[in-house]
Length: 445
Image (cartoon, rainbow, N blue to C red; front, side, top):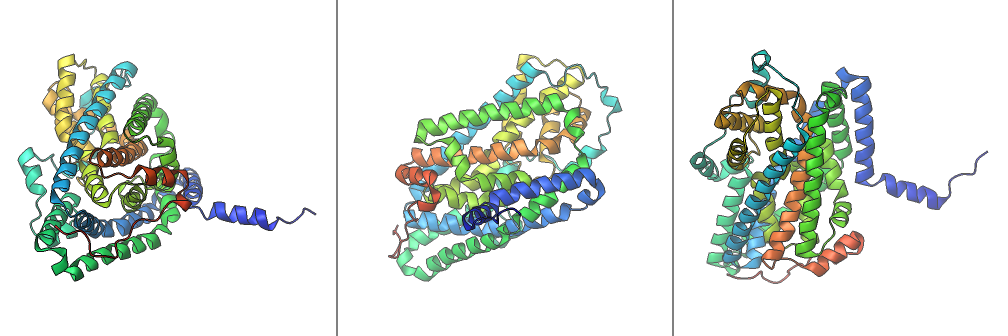
């Protein structure tokens, strides 16, 4: 008979299995197996993942409001809000344009659609219409107006992050103007509400492995592993370009802050695993914001950069959109000139912003780009129906990592970064210094 496991070994196994990262990985493997061997059953498990995402989304808007108001109130300076916001937008524009250009370079080098010779007349575009629900990409004026909520309640009810962010900034400005000393109960209520929401998120996160199981079973059951081979070249080009872009992000992080991207990924491995498993970066937004604050970024910087980045800094989506546009052109035998490819970048600079929350936004952006270029049949967008879902992992990881790096860089740029805390936290999160708590009255305007 074998010797029973020692208490030390049992304790080690127990610690490993209690890790959310390990639980999510195990759940993903089981979900893939279920989706592959029992596709009908796997396809019916979509509500499990969707339910978890809804549980997280229901608290994101109030959390953003609380984090931003508390962060600005403690900073005590509205000018810093303007500086951080402006620097974030400049960074977002530069980096997303670089991502679009990288996608074009990869498409020209790999030629993922070359040789397919597809007749656009044979394509069924009904699937694109079903994805987009008849929506169109808003124009500049419409987009700006959409950032302004029709009412304070509507911003929270519709879960529009930019509207909630605008409301939070205005509320914080008003709070600072009258003086926090005159409304200490209001400030305390908002701060404590934020702490309660983080506790709620902790409860919901215990369901994460179940959600990943359902999402992966649905993905494989609905699309099958065979779909990977159909778009193998396009998938390889997208994921390869995204990997190169992540290396560039790591170099930027090192150059600006001296931090290691690998240590940061180890620090946030649970969040990235969950985002991959559920194909959604929104589900980890609250935990990522908390971890970035623990890693040395001030609360007001985190509260401004992350929600804004989820609409304006979609690096993974930018790589995918430019590469997919070239793929569509090559697949139908259209050879885009340099001038036309520059047009693609210029159009996507506009259409790639504010995609979050719009049904079928990738297909809307691709359709708008095809129409603007003028030589790509809009029907070619239907080619992306089979590949779009497979690109989710690439988009989610690159978008999430891009926004995390953006928060570090903008925080450092604005003097809102504690490098000593960041180094200590990434080296050993368990022994990192606790976040400072202000028992005294927060900074006054």
